[in-house]
Length: 140
Image (cartoon, rainbow, N blue to C red; front, top):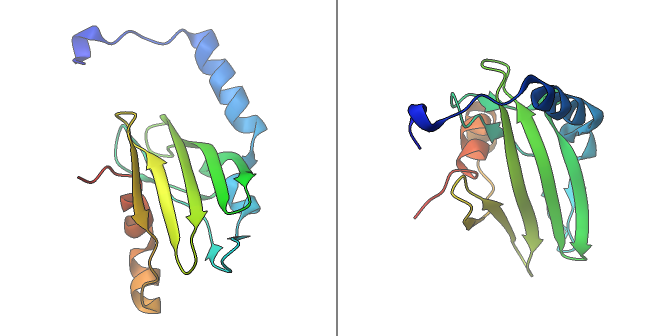
């Protein structure tokens, strides 16, 4: 879609979206979660679809659900602190015998998956936003 084809969202619709966003709990209050294989998921970070900035903390709000004993789903929206764009995310964490798989819906509507892996502590501290954000980018 080109810039010429985009239309402005009506102000009333934008206000309704913001009100719905603000009514949800910050996602970080719902984490960490422990899966049936004993692994923990400590949270998620999101990348703004408009400007590419990291979205986390109180700017990421939504819900967790456990539709199956070994699956935790996340439905959330992030409000970018830089450009005020709302970015939606649907993802799930699936426990297998000894690992955890994260699955997410990309901007094109397709589902992607990747095994979660534990990084060395220093790398985790330094690169946390980049690693978490990479989970939500489509890979081929």
